[in-house]
Length: 322
Length: 309
Image 1 (spheres, helix red, strand yellow):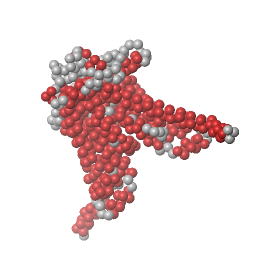
Image 2: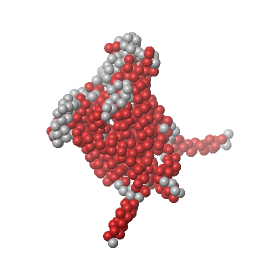
Image 3: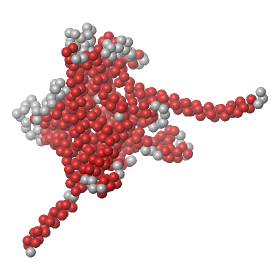
Image 4: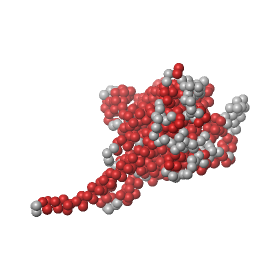
């Protein structure tokens, strides 16, 4: 019995110090946890609310106070969007709620899928053209010493400083003159003005970080400039290429102003334009508008989450250069 | 004798040309050709064309009558009080967005600079607002601000902060701030990433030295973290202010410049002048003034902050 006493008192003697350290550690952990939850709530809250209110039915969406969780979740909005065009929901066949209260799914719901197809077509074309134009140019700027190199860099930067809205008027007149109104070609070409400078900056930053010795070695081995780019630099530049593909894809997918000016019908309207067209119609259900918003939001968010690493490194490379 | 000299001259010329324009330069030209063509066609030419247009009284409602008016369009604008009001609103909007984004991004970056479990997940999910298309961003906030069924009214009422529903975007005093909030939400992730990168570049030795010298957490933040973050702040300020000054989408989706002209900023004014009043001459002049302001702004910011870095 007596031997047990000192054995017990020993840890007790250390305890206050240890407890303090542990308390500080727990306190720090709690602070970090609370801060993380706050950041996540801020970043995700609005999007979660968008998704939640897209699956609420008419009675719920207009409830006061709002139903933070749907009590009768429904997919009727998404059904209207993805249903085959033959079974479109029209004013007559729509839900029998009061249309004046916004209780109706528009017959134009079926325009969302063609809009998405247009968006995809434009985005793919823009991505390909960005690579074709951006890769050789970025390699030349990063690795070839030529007269007027810094002038080239500054003029590329300058084109990016011009606000899009300043380009809209001349673009509009040119597009009209060429007869490209309501044609996705007008979007593909004008989106290059937005995407190519950024692509070049991201790639220049990446190519410059690769050692010059690689370039010299390839050239000593008898590679032409083109071969050096193709066989030595391109394989090494894959991460930056992924980033560039993502940026130009997302920029075209999300672009609104130019598409608003140059498109008129479903022949060329991109997803953002179709989605925005619902918002100005007061007879359309709020939950349907939110569902359309979700459709526009899901692909870019998925891409961003899957390729997060590439995006972060690409953004920092592009921003530090630009 | 003369024939000999003449023969030598083109040779010499060719040699000089070859020196000036060697293989390197030739391949550089080839590699840059597509870029030059593309940027020339979709950027430089339209910019020049806009300048040209801004010198005419070009109204689409009068297609046959397009007189050259020199800089009259610019003078008209500079004398117009509506223009200066819009310029003031743009500046106010940009300052609010830049300050709020920088402060929030700094807090987020400080959090992500710590090592803790789940850090990667938080960093990844933070990209969500960055990826949201501006159309969806506009619709989402319009729905949140909705005067009858919106989440903002609902939440504030439930917490007892307001006693009845408010028409948020209908209040001229709040409109710009509410639109700014929507933009800040979208821009914080990029700003935080940029700040985080500069933060990571701060050598740990600096903190250790400060700790040894007896600096507490707050002093370390004030005297070590903040000064070394200057390049990051510069980047964020330039980036975000440019985005804020050019912002069009949110104004189109949320308020259309209203109520009254409470949210009529420069970019919205360009749109109204060109595509609602169909006055492309003054619209272009307005766009040019905006572009020059953006140029001047980025130059000033880089000059003043860049030198002190």
